[in-house]
Length: 367
Length: 163
Image (cartoon, rainbow over the protein chains, first blue to last red):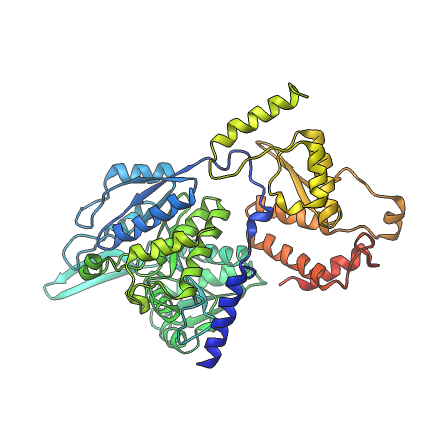
């Protein structure tokens, strides 16, 4: 306990001096016209979605960030994404969204998954890391889960062979496995990450997960300076809760990625604070990192106690994606200061604040 | 130069109106040079016409550590050329070349700017951090910074500090 409070105090002292926060804006030379405002499609969604997307809107406004939102009303009960929304995303290339409620069972497929498939957002990225001021059981956690987003167990191919017998097809292709492996290694290379771990269960699904592993191994050969290893998913889950600091970048097929990301998020502070997004060759959709389709309990919506931190940090990732690093840094720094201070926290972090109180605190800490 | 510099000022004022959250002020160049050497911390971003910019940049570079360490570059609508920040056309005395005592820091930091321009921020950060650590340590410095190292020694030190 004392070891943790020492780190806590050190971090707080650093933040107070401001010297621990790196300012990249010093040597960033923009091209003329880089400051022109960019359009971003905004889908508030269901449940806590409108609460947290509104939080982002307020903070962007306070920062005078060079983006403007094109808002669209989409709900999980709709059978398809409205065409004008898809058009808007195709035009703007970048979208920020809250969760869309997926009905359990029935014939309606999740709109969240539909969006990812239609835009071919083949990579889902979740960054799970310890936030200073939010002590958890483990320290030094900084895991990036890169999850194949279009196939695998989410191929949506199910049928009832005879009444009472359902077959569900898991489809793994070399094409998709290769491109997610390439993205994972490229991400590691461009972000100075040292290790990529492939998560699989090829001892059981010898062909499907075996194909995934082969693709990862092929790509790994091209990045000799990045360590590559493999771990069976059940052992992986155990290692995540025992010794999460051993992981760096993790590349996974669809379902394992979902589980690993949520586990890692829980380990490092909760799904309420982890940022993430989905990216494809031409578009990017940013949403809460882990458990993005989650729209929260009705009670949280009524009491306005949803945690906006995850979406705020995801919108900082979005700002970097749009090449506005200075705004991204300001937003992240303000959010991290609010968390470090510990006075303003929503229920999932053990506090009693409302969403709006957290937003106000972040805006107050913007420089 | 009421018309020439007046036109420059008018253009700046017009653009300033579109950024109300950014403070805008003007300073006459002679007073500016004096303020630079007396109280440089009052300045943030400075926009200048060609000649004044040359003088102001060299003065500011000298104030803050010397032209051997300040990064910079040139950018247009379609291209960018990165070179040593201030006094970029300066090719140095023959003696420095013979003894290999040129300071590589300025161009290293400019190349970090270039990496950011090319959208490789992680590499830019690594380079900058390594260079700043070498300078902070103070053991490996070329003649213009008061040391006795050669260019190659500084390079080796930077490479050693890369993570």
